[in-house]
Image (tube, rainbow, N blue to C red):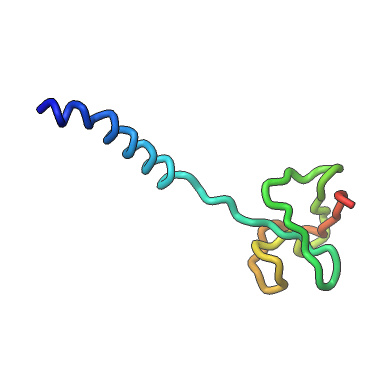
Length: 83
C-alpha cells in the first residue's frame, strides 16, 4: 500500500501532462505569399502595421504551407510590413 501511495504524485503528474497534451490544439502554420515564388512564415504573428495585414480583397492572404495548393488559413490580400 505504501508503494502505491508513493507513486500517486507521479501518476497524477503523468496524467496531467497527458491531458495537457491531448486537449491542446496544435498551432497551424501560416505562410504569406510575397511574390510569384516566395512565401514568408508568419506563424504566431499578430497581423498589424509592423508585421503583415490581410486587406479586404477577395483573395488568399495566408496558407498552411509555402505552396499555392496548400489550404487557405486567412482570406484577403497579403500585405507584408516586415521588410
